[in-house]
Length: 164
Image (cartoon, rainbow, N blue to C red):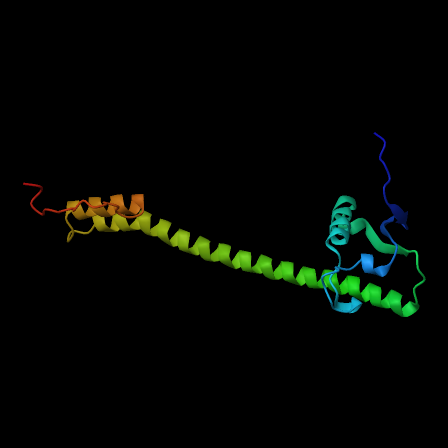
């Protein structure tokens, strides 16, 4: 099977090329900040991220921006810093969200494990206790297995003399 080569390579690393008319195309037009702290355009970010995923992050070498205007060395440096800082900021936000999700998952696991353990152990403990009668043991078993007693508007009465 012949593989189509979509990206330029240098030293066995893939180079992503962006061909733009001017620098304003790179940045989000809704963001009033200067270039150094400005957000990148959503379409540019989507192209860069999907291309990096396609070629694999390990084989990614550089991003080459081809403009139709001349840029000074300072503008090149500012552009490099702006792109680098944007993706570092995005990485930081993603890691915070991931940590929050893991903490929530851990809390949920602990709570779920606690209730499951109680549902398994509590009926056995109550059944083996001589102070508690059979009807309480059965009631607790049913409530633990069903996750609580839902009786609606019906009233429940318990009798200690075996229902006589």
